[in-house]
Image 1 (spheres, helix red, strand yellow):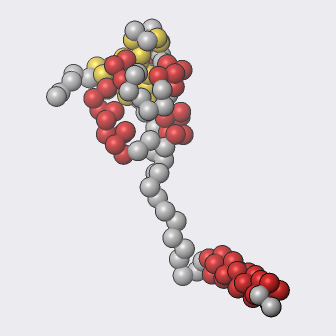
Image 2 (image 1 turned 120 degrees about the horizontal axis):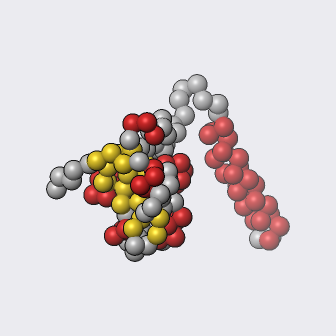
Image 3 (image 1 turned 90 degrees about the horizontal axis):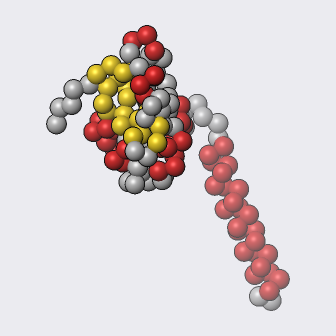
Length: 132
């Protein structure tokens, strides 16, 4: 399904700011999400709040999934005219996990030893005082 993408100005985008026609900009691309309002997991209010505006920062702050980012293609109708483009906001990686390296402090060791030691002390204390 190949759509012809045209260049659009903010002046035109600003006119599409209600339920009948909901457009916004994310990273210099223009999206018409009018048909998606009822399907959006966060509710239509979230989309309507950014209608006719640049929604890049709000979109990236939420940290949308890879599936959501792939689905965006079906709503893309164009790009901003070159004179009105801004620098892209980097995508937030919601699947990145931090793994401590060999230089990491031993806090991970302490994070499980202390609770285990406290549990053992509590068990011994319970047996000494309540089982005699």
